[in-house]
Length: 351
Image (cartoon, rainbow, N blue to C red; front, side):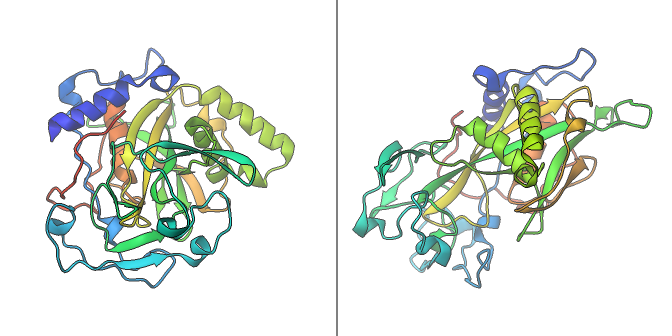
């Protein structure tokens, strides 16, 4: 509902600590401050990409789940999801990957931040959800947003929530004379996007938060790896990029915390993210970033938000929230989403 979306917007706009501070130049457009401006944000519709077949990187077809059968509280006696965990996950011996047979070989404490010692090393693993407590049925966590047509972990390393961090780096699109481009009297944004390998779709730079890693360290690391090819650069260049990120990534707005409609999600494992927007109001700072694709990204570039976008997962929905928070021109019409709201078991996001 619009009230819920307004709550999302206000919490994200207010933020907490450094992540909620914003530094704008006097000439840049002001952030929206009224409730009516924030209530226009469309509700997030889930389980569109999460029900796609085949499962990424495999030939596994999901059990078909109609829109009205996504919610767990809706009876669906015919539902027999396909069980699938990718071989590289099932056979992994890494401390960073959960064991496959958790009901037999180990006990995982869900819905808490877990502290454990494995092979002499202490790990901190966040098994909480931004959406509150999730159900654990017969020892397995249950996707809080409903059925996906597949059980197991797929290609995800953790049972339950797999936490990620997404970095939305923006600036104003400018004409040759340096003036800010406007459409319908609204300034037009640009953001840094990567072309994801495998999916062949443009996306916000980001990735999963590692055990023992702080979220905002993950944000800087993922952006430097996905959009700046930091790992492929000489050590002196890596140090310079690290200094640039520390300088420019100290202030940002938390745009979203919660579930991501990702094609890798299953009934027992899913991705949740925190998306933070870092905005260059002058157009000078982020232009110095040496964008370069490497590894999981096939390309990287500034994309102008002047027409409708169809991005990976529900990233266009995050971009739309950035447009509203920056009071910028918003052309997003959610091309992949259904016309009707899908059932969900949770209606609020905890910020």
